[in-house]
Image 1 (spheres, rainbow, N blue to C red):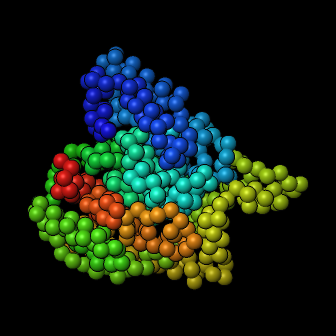
Image 2: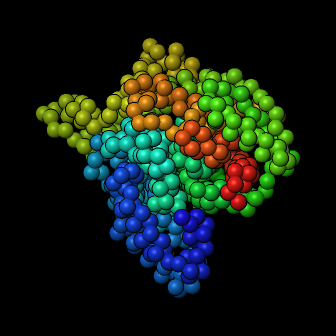
Image 3: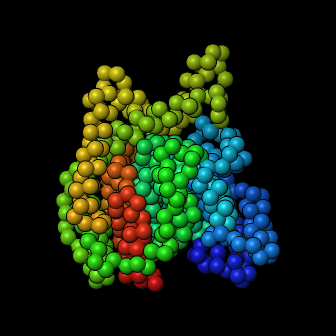
Length: 474
Ligand code: GLN
C-alpha cells in the first residue's frame, strides 16, 4: 500500500484522485473488517463528501494540504460531528457528538479523508482491545494474536492496509504498544503538543493523541498537521506546530543516547536482542550510546495505576444515563443511574472506577493518590537528570511480541505489565516514539522505543528514521 506521503503527492499532481484512494480503502475494509473487527463504524457518506471536496479543489488548481486525499482511521474515542462515537462502551450506544475534535478538524484542513471509527479497549483501558464491548480486534499479521491496545483498531487498520494512517490516543502506552505489536511507527507526543479537545477523557493529565503510520515520514507529516496551540484545550502548549518533516532526515551524528536498563529488564530475549541491534545501528550512524539505570522507572506502573484510575473515576462520572447514550429506566433517578452504569460499563472500567474512587476517598487520599503524585514528581526529576547527560533514551516498547488472545485476560496484573516500558513517559509528560526494528517469536514485529524531553519530537523522528533505514526500509 502507498504511504500517506505518496498518496498526497499523487493527489496533488493529479496522478490519482482522493475518490480513487477512498475506494481502495473502502474495498480493503469490506474485504477484511468482518474477520478482523477493526472498524466499529464506517462513515462512507462523510468520507465520499470529503474526498470529492479535495478532488474539486485540485481540479480548480487550489492548494490542498499535506494529507490531500489520504484516508485516515480515527480511534473511536475521538468526537466526529454526527458520527457515532462509542469508546467501545455500551454506555455511549447511540450517542452522536455535535462537534469535531480539534484533531479531526485539523486532519480535514490538511486534506485527509476520515473513513471511520476504530475499535479500542473500552474507554482506552487495556492493552489488547479484548476489553471492547464490541469484541476484540485481531492482529492482521497473525489473527490468533492481539493487535495490542488500547488503540488496537487504529493499529490494525494501518497494518491491514485499510488506511495508510490512523490516529490513536496514549495514556500509558496505547499508541506505542499497538504500534509495536503491529509493526508500525507510533508517536506519543509531548503533553500539550496536540489538542485534547474532543478526545473523550480517560486520565486527563496523561492522555495525548498521536499518529500510527507505516513510515517515520508519515508520522512526521501527520503530527505536524495535528499539533499546535488550540484555545479549546487549556493544557495546550501556547505555540504553533513545530517543524518536523524538515528534520526527519537529520540523522543522529553527535547525539548522545542512553540505553536504560529498566527499559529492557524483563523483556523477552528476542526483544532485548533487537534493542541491542538498534543501539549498534545508532552508533554506526554517529551517535554515542551509554548505559544508564533509572531505578525510578520501576515505580511507574504502581503510580500510574493509582493516578489513571483516580482521574478516570472522576471523568467517567458524567456517564450517568442523563446526558449521553444509554439509559436504563427506573422509577427514581438514583436507581436509574445505578442501573445504567451497571449495564453500561464493562468489567475493566468498573474495576478502574472502584480503584480510583477508593484512592481518592478521604481516609486514603494521602496514602494512595498523594503518594502516587510524589512518585510522579520523582519520575519527572529522574528524567530531567537523564536529559542533562544525554539527548534521548532508548529501550524496548513492550516486553514481548503480540501475544495470544486470552493469555492475559484472567490476570489484570499480567495485562498491566504490557505497559511497563511505556508508562514512565506518560507520567513525565514527555515525548516518545516506537519504531519497528527486527522480528521475534513467530516472525512477529518488535518495537524499539526512543524517548526524549518535552518538545523533542523532531529529534526522536530523526532517530527513528535512522533505525528504519538500518532495519531495511529505505
Ligand atoms: N494499557 C494501559 C491501561 O490500561 C494504557 C492505556 C492507554 O494508554 N490508554 O491503562
